[in-house]
Length: 425
Image (cartoon, rainbow, N blue to C red; front, top):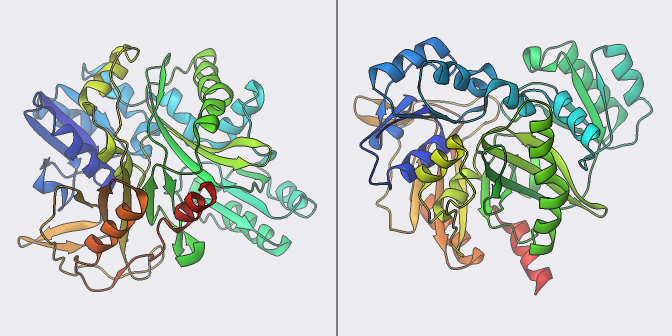
C-alpha cells in the first residue's frame, strides 16, 4: 500500500515509523514532511493546509490510504476533500473536527450532554468579557475559541492578568481570528491526564494514558508551549478512574457527536483533570497529541495501519489494539528562546540509537545534506523501559547524546509522575 501522511512534525514522524512496521506498506509519502522525516518517507513539500494541492499530491503518489494528522487541515476539511476524490482517510471530517476547532462548540456540547467539565462562559463582545472577569472566581482560564498551536490558553491568577488576556486575544488578536471569541472558565485543580483514543464513531478504544508537560521551564514555569515532553502510562490514571472516564466522558462524547450528526472517526484526544469531584474534560483534540504520540505509539504492539483501516471502515470492534506493559518517556529538545524568538540553522548531530530508543524529528531541515534546526521544538528523544524511572533515565541519556547549538530541554520531565508513583506505593 502507498500511504500519504499529512504533516511534518514529531507526531507525524512517530506515526510514519509505526506505519512502516506493517509489511503491507510499500511506500510512505509525507506532505510536507521535514528534513528528519526524509529518512523514513518521501517528503513532498508544500503546505499541510493547501487542500487542493494535497489532493493532487495524493493522486500523483497513487495513495491507497491518507492519514491526516495535524489539527489545521482536519478543521479545514481535508478529509472531506480527500474522500470526495476517492482517497480513504484516517481522521475526522470537518463537521466532527469542530470539537477541537471551536472550544465554544466543545463546551456547549458537554453542557448539553452532561459531560463533566469546568464551569464557563463564552464571549464575542470584549466589554462583556471584561465585566465577567472583573467578578469571576480566580484563578480564571481564558481560552481563544479557535486553533492556536496549543498556546491559546492563559491561566490568570489576578484580575489584571485576566483583563490583559481578554484584551490581547479579542482586541490585540494575539492568536488572530482564533481569539475573536473567547471562553472564560473556572480553574480546575488536580493531576492532568491525556488519553488518546481510537474511534470509528460507534466503538471507542482508549490508548495507554500519558502525561504532557506544557510549560517551557522546569517546575511548570514559563509560557505554555506545544509540549516539552511526556511520559506514559500516567500513574495517576488508575483502572478505577479509567472505568469512570469511559462511562462518564468517553462513551457520552462519542454518542453526543453521533446524535449531533457529527460522527467522529479517527483519533479523539481527551485532555482530563482528575479533580476532587471526579474526572473532568479540559479539552478535546481531533487528532493525535504532540508529544503524547511520541510515547504512546512506541508502546503499541498491534498494527497501527490495521487499526486505522478498521476505524475508517467502521470495524474497530474486534480489531486488536494491544499495548505493552512497559513505560516510555519523551524529552523535547527545543531551541533556546522557544516559544518566543529563537535562532535557526544550527547543525544537528544525532547519535546511534539502541532498540529501545527513538528520535522523532520535528523542527529540522536538510541543508546541503546536513540536518539543521528550523523550528522551536526541534526533536523528541524517546526511550522505552520496563518501568517509568528507567524510561526517564534512558530518555535523558539519549537527549544528552544529541548535539546542536542553542539546545534547551526541561530537566524535570516525568518528575510529577514519579511523585505520583511514590504516593501509590
